[in-house]
Length: 387
Image (cartoon, rainbow, N blue to C red; front, side, top):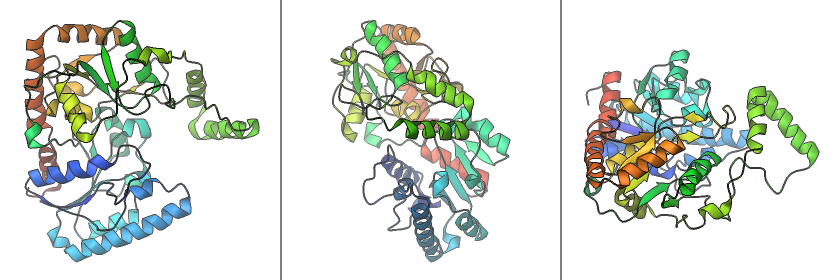
């Protein structure tokens, strides 16, 4: 397969969370599938995520897509099987997508966090020939829109030398991830129950900025009232109500985390900790004003693919679609509440034999059925392309 790739490639770092690894994952996955990837040299796709001014975004779009169309033309359309992109709505130029597909090159867009970002499919996604939808919970969004889509796993890739499961266990029980109020509350319950937990990720520690918390540097009252009025018009009364309710939640004492927060990790150490923890934790709830504190949005994340691929003993939050990915309890273990999580940790830390079975079985399933090469095969088949 010859795939033209648009996946937030950038020549410099931007203040945008979690975008740089997608390029490496997808390029390595295409190469492992025996395919060839192409790209538009010099186009900074991640820059489009930083354009707050509509005019600046329009100028960026014009430049980026003009260069992309020129490169596709230079590559000769007959030499490209399909375009695979990871684009946010604001980055999409519908006219450019239509121009590419008029040359007989189908365009496929991957997007994650659909459940958190959208209540309906963005109009900008409509021109794509196919949507790659990783969240089971997001499928109704695309079904309602009548969009052609495939439910495929998150595109995770791990180096071949990391595809082993019999690891030394040197890191105890670990969670890696940024801080938010839901994660904060869930992990605080574990700590209150005496779980010796190691936490790593942005935002943890006394100097951190708490997400979805009122800022100490508050704007003038009139400006705040205007902001609330604008939020109410755009999001509706239920979202405004839950936003207000979130601000009154009980704060977790910072001292509770003091001895459990550890250093941020390099990419190599990130894989080491996932592999060498006795139990690696996943949290699939996410804060959003569309939902209450007690009934948050839940959907399966990238780590539900990545951690089993690395041979982790993986305990993650149960979601509606997770049983379609794994045999729960045999390949990965799951929890539904903080108490359930604490009990599962207790059971797993007491049973090394079970931990080893989970590592081996979870890795076998993830590598065999949830890999990028396997997803590319399904995309090619859907588009009628010989892989």
